[in-house]
Image (cartoon, rainbow, N blue to C red; front, side, top):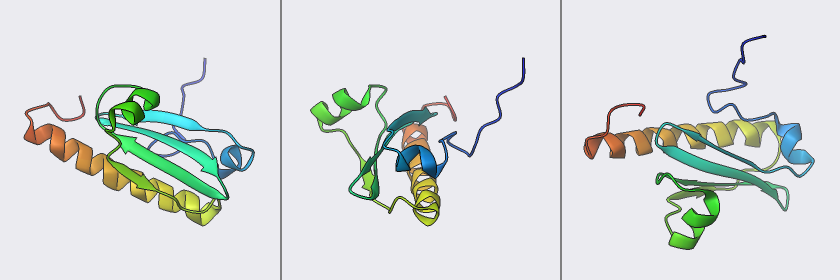
Amino acid sequence: MEEHKPRNQFDIPAVFYFEVGNTHSGSRDHLRYQVKPEDGKLVIETWSEDVCYDIAKERGIISGSAEPPISPEGFQEMLAFLQQEYERAEAAARSQGAPEGA
């Protein structure tokens, strides 16, 4: 069996995945996120609590959002935004005594 190789630092499918209307949810350490195509944009929402998107939305704990265009450039903007959110979530977790990358 071939080893899985991440597509990028968040293992998010290529921009075509969103061009055809698919939604992607994922996590990396303390960061949780959802990316959904809507009106020509990649609607990105992030949170840190270990719950699904629907519960995060219901609890009002969405901590970050961005809406770059659905395009190769917008895809790169999305990755940069998620990296910033990841660094913020990890810093917050460390300040609360959580081990790094846990």
